[in-house]
Image (cartoon, rainbow, N blue to C red; front, side):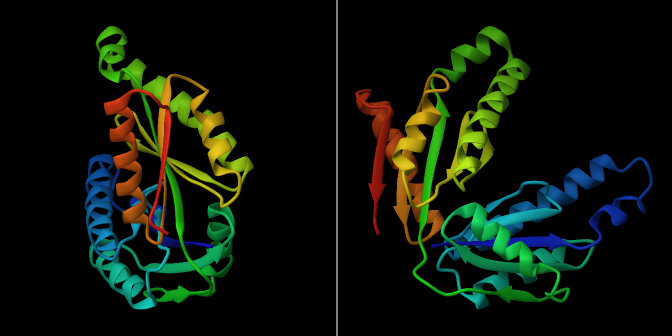
Length: 235
């Protein structure tokens, strides 16, 4: 099973409405600082943060302890302009885990952690990227390239979520997919058929290790150029 933690900044929208209309730069600056430090502490324990809307962040937190989550929440709380709480739970798919964590979050007090569920925890991820991004960018420009990647992300997310997975854009041409525990190789094959894509797949007990393995798989694909998918595991 995969563990997902949801961090909620309570009353974040209301806070943004108290700082005047010349605020977007301050909001962006605040979000960037919170994300940076939350990512730093989460990866220290082997997790990985997905920013999503920034007022809500998801941590891929398989095999992180409740004390690890408390330390993460403490760092986030120290930077957030509003109260923060965290809920984590398990599921057979990433989407199920996130839904389960959400089902508890309203019962978690501000400043507290709700750590739910027990079972064998692991992470299955795919790191997908677009071939030839640099010449594409030189030809059509940064904005149109970004638009192309977002369109690819939307199609990948559709496939992922239909099967209980989740996809997140990581910048550049990089897309992270949290995969379900069944038929994940077939799903990734379907995803990379969308465009000129390649994918590293990794299985590990913690998210940071899975991300590292997926990056290694992508490096092998770039080096050998004889495959579009390589899978690695340390489970």
